[in-house]
Length: 111
Length: 359
Image (cartoon, rainbow over all chains, first blue to last red; front, side, top):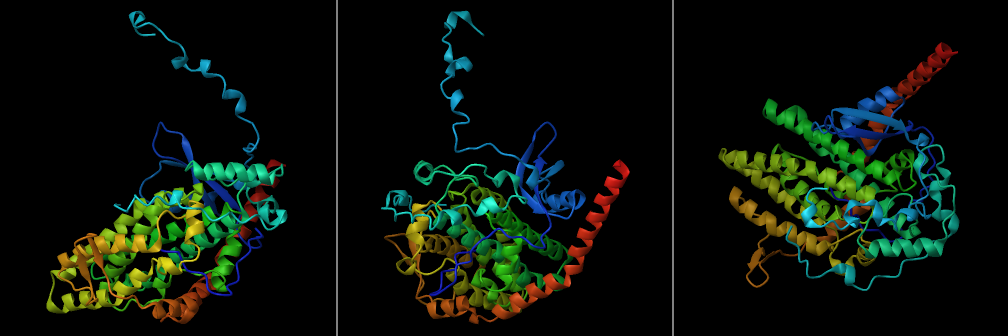
């Protein structure tokens, strides 16, 4: 549906504080699309416990058979890398880790 | 979508990004330590370095992700837009839910239920995306209930006949698709991904709506009149869904500079009109606009004047059903409080039992 509701003069901008009083805990949802594939992060749901989180994840993210398996993880338990730091920089100057770095004569054949 | 790609808005002079108002406001997410672990930051961003990375990301057409530094204005604009979008999906269940018990066949009823469930799902994808910006579900729900955040005005119109289920699917959802296809390229990763998911599902909505209209168009005289009456009532509000004309659209330039919007309101509206007029002709229906005409030069269907007074009246809360829609939503929320409390109590009891067993 559509969302672009123009701002009215004097409209008070809602300020997000992140404060949560009564909401159920948040769970991150991972769905395996079919056997042989990894579970992939698709979004989140709120639920009181893991069992209902799985039910909610099923109803929210697999209504068209997008999954054969679902994982839910309490969002608070996920730790993440510091993406603003040079965490992955050491790997940027090591092209020799890729097979395409090496030039092999055609005569050698499959290698 | 065949939008005029020649105007590449990335190369329009971007409005200067407003500086973060205060450092504290920029780090709203820091306070959410117990809710979303991957948003917790144990470092402070250097604003200048963060802004340089942000600008480079936008310029390269890459996505901004939740843990990245972003201008406070970007964050607030996204929260407002995604929240409005989510609320629209949720309130959008009401006009259609109104006809579930009166669907003409069992199959149409099953389809309508599936569609209304999709709207709930779309609302949840979007709330999930909004929450990555540091706003809580509690806050989002409260701001809808107390009127601080709005939803699309289109849902403040009543659904008076079964044909309205056709008109909503065909016109309202098609208008939404035109908008949402463009938003799939939005610069904020979680919003863009929610749009991709929604667009996949939305074309079912538009097609089931047109299928209702087709059935009516091939029906009796009374059924054809019902279809025409519905089109008469939904055509103009559907065009208004794209928002005010570009000249009055104050935030468009900034949203485009930030890569949140890709096309202007008028561009998207024209796209919708061009695709919809032939569909109406196929139904043998008349669009309620005596000035509607085809421009051979631009190959566009041109419309008469949109009644912007009506548009602003509905935005300001004076549409046919503004108060009823929110009252119904609040009532449902309050009536279901016991379910939320019972689930919480059950979860606590089960957790306590697990501790006992493991002790």
